[in-house]
Image: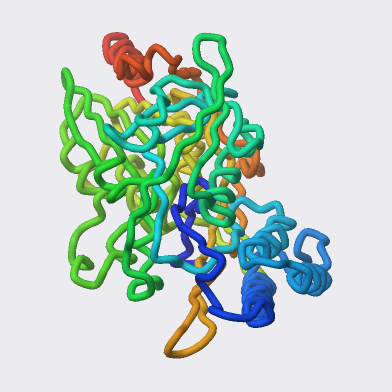
Length: 439
């Protein structure tokens, strides 16, 4: 059976890592090249063994390794070598297949968060007294480029990934637009130190790096509230107890706990904005609270394996209440699956921005070279492909909302959530009209 796969978009994450040319093999250029050739081979083998498509989308994967190792032999710094491995993996053009370079002890933080709003990348949060604020960046600013690379909807997350993890800089150069005027800002990083290797294989540590937060919980917490009989739940991910640290494995899934608090509501808002995904089993459990009977979510296809992924009814049930789902450009993977499933079945109205279009079942593989002085690295790769009951997939397409709602710069500055307000208004109208859910 296809189980324990993660529907999680690592390319939607801003990993923060700091690379120093002397970080790895202190000494010879040859030593660094030998190390990077070994890492390239390890990443190649992970993908060759586990990628869902045994034809590798028509790419000669062995040839790509040979060409990458030749490039490494001409590189003069570990940063260039890491970039060569990164571009080898990007040849797959797959949202859930990524190179995870060696973890470092120093993290540069720039103190701001930005993402696409429609076709425009905007700053929506700035850390008080942080580097970005000191450099003059403002909430609502449009980001035109990062380190000279155009910032657009299709490539922004990958650009962030590359320039903050693969080739990070101590100073981040942003081209912005404010009040119709272009300007360039240079943001020197605040560098933080963390423990290097002791928890590198703990998947939950990944989330400590999302959006530069001290922890992801502080930046994008689970929430639950009731307004005029309408329940609201903010679901930051679908990561349940199976992947948390051992001491937490007896706790219920936070997504489920948030939903339970809305029990008895006349209608429900599910907010998956900024939700990068999670595990298939956690998505199945959450969706079960919204269904009257066992329902197909999607078909998962891997190497020689095909399985229908379903949601079975659970209690407390929300199967009889109108639902609105809030999505944005960072809603990815399992959060997109939930939104599309509820849209196809007519169970919910989808409100917000077009989603990321990064849907697959993936796994993270961590490896290391050396023993006492080990260098850890890894890869995330797609192991199952998702197709919906209508025969379509939404990889690269995303979910188009029923009601488009894209915050403007003024909304961000005023901290005004007009999309949530639209969801409330829409559900109130349904309740007033005596709207019922599909039978």
